[in-house]
Length: 293
Image 1: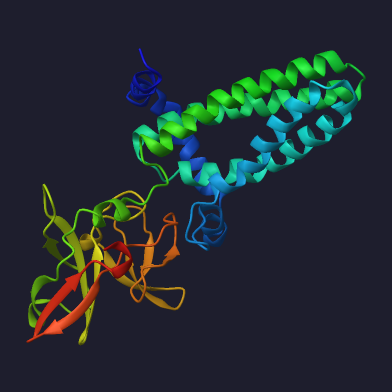
Image 2 (image 1 turned 90 degrees about the horizontal axis):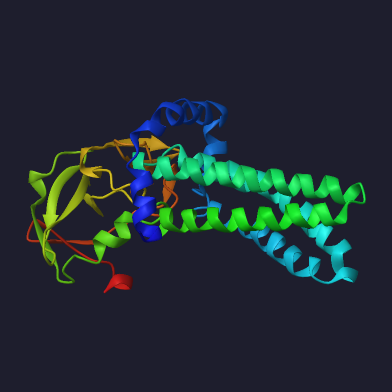
């Protein structure tokens, strides 16, 4: 069986949920206030922060493994291992914040990912203790074991990102399916004031849901699939979040600025794809933004 097939089977094992759900609730309860969660999601930069933070421990530990192979460079390897252990804490916190807001299959694999990372971290801490006690051979055995486990865990993280679309923008995928021509969404008077309405845009194999919000004579049109987890934005609400009028996803509460689609509240980190709009004879016309054409 391929690695892909094995991990997909793990993601289907419901037995894990008995332990996962209490852990998820604990993470959500611990990560307060909301500003802390948003910081860990990466809402403030418009990009998930976890893949950025993990570069430090991963890079430090790989570099330490290379330096450990050269006896005179082993003191530097110890410094790098310590740096990786310290950097693993914020990286793990950001990963936990994202994990707690994911779909069921992603959470199951994410739990395995977290367990393996915890084991690797424990081995590296043990390696530091052994080195400090002048047990260099044991220290190197522990650190290389930690590197091997962290590498396996990284493969699971890659599967979560690329095969399960964890952290990817679902809106960016949907917008590619839209026609590049102007779409006639109907008369302005047909749209309710201050709440999202569903329209569809012509795509390739299937039409693409759009969430349309009317504010007086201003109309904002977004791809209907939330960038975080493809939630139906047309079923959401319009609320003021952080001083901005936002379209709020009904699934996880992500809030997107109506003016530009930027996330104002997580768990979404990626912006929501917004279409260009113009009025023509009292009808709302929309098309894919120029950067996507």
